[in-house]
Image (cartoon, rainbow, N blue to C red; front, side, top):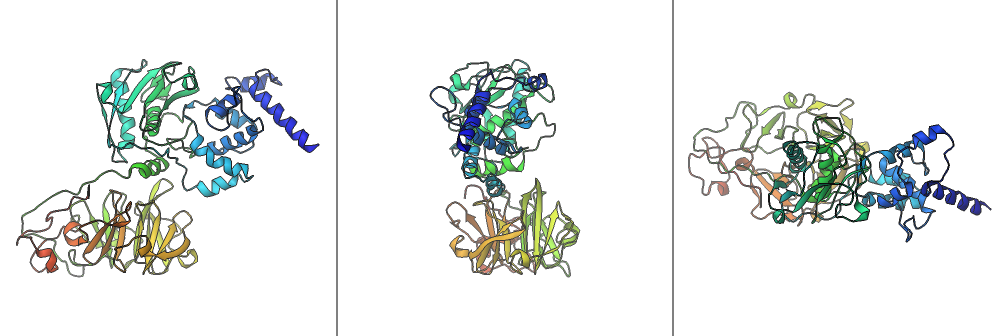
Length: 536
């Protein structure tokens, strides 16, 4: 009896969703559901339920689960039925690409009657990757047609800014070409059926705003029935829509993170747009960080860094720890002091006392690491059995904290974000620990360093992921760059930290190791020839 009742309820729900003849109880509900798309068609179009041969869902019993999946993906209350919040969601304008990449994982959890499982497991990673990417870095695009509501210059400016969102955080570049055959990506403004078939046709104002294909197609189409605008809340902001679609063009699928650029539903004009962390993590999983070259410089001078009484020597001191600052500089720690290091050498005026830069930080720290957390750069400093956390060089409230209850080893040797997977690792002796910065604890059992990072010395002084996304390890004056893809030290390493990071050369009173003196003419000072990290 219960089974028959359940089937009857499902069938009634299906016909209410699929048939326009489902009666509205009052005028208020009729007004509320005005412009509501056909729900079953919506669920099919965006990948939440399979389509049968007659165009309807293949199994009506899948609809409640599909609604729960949709609600989970959108980040709204999971009810499994067409409540007010879900109705509002369905009426929102959105991207025409489906959500299948993100919803597939959720279908498994919901099918197992555990809708919270998705939130628990994937909360750290909500971005989704299609899996395909461009094999080239310089991507060319062509306008097959242009927007009608704005001038060509306004359109080109908005499109260029949309591409720049992605080129700023990857090694990719985007260039307009005048010949269609030279382009990787074709941009088109069109109405209704526009050459992509019935399934992908545009639907007039509202609804689908645009869609794009994944590599190695990448073409992006915009619905000309929308009123596109620039630098305005009026109409549909072309920059925001284009930046989202170009995320698809380079390989990103939809994200379930509300506020992410790759969230499927249009979120409106943002005057001072900054690409959210979720999108950055996703695209850098595909392409890595921007290519950064260390300048190739040679300065002929007898001047060099001077040693001030009581301060560590810039050219001969080992480091206690090293990390990146949110200002793009590298910060190296020694005793009570810190150096700020640019792309060529130590910044003028350094070393300085640590608490001048990181106010409230201890001296003689053992490890440091900087990561993006809650949309902000956070720096963790570890000393003994305590840790400190800073936001933009300001100590966060409630710190320092004890590390022992969190599984963090005392007096660690190094901590860093690994370019291989974006996770934080802490080195202690011959073992490494995986550190979760949100939970602020070690997860998983410690393992031997040599199993993941072979070729390094038995212990290291410090480690970091630099601005180019590469991982560096330091021991004494030597440093190694690690190939995260091939899991081996890059050829021709180790090299000299003094020469290539601190900007030191041969100068009076400084003895460099014999191997560093080969080929260095007498009198060549700091900024001896810096290596080019790119392409090695």
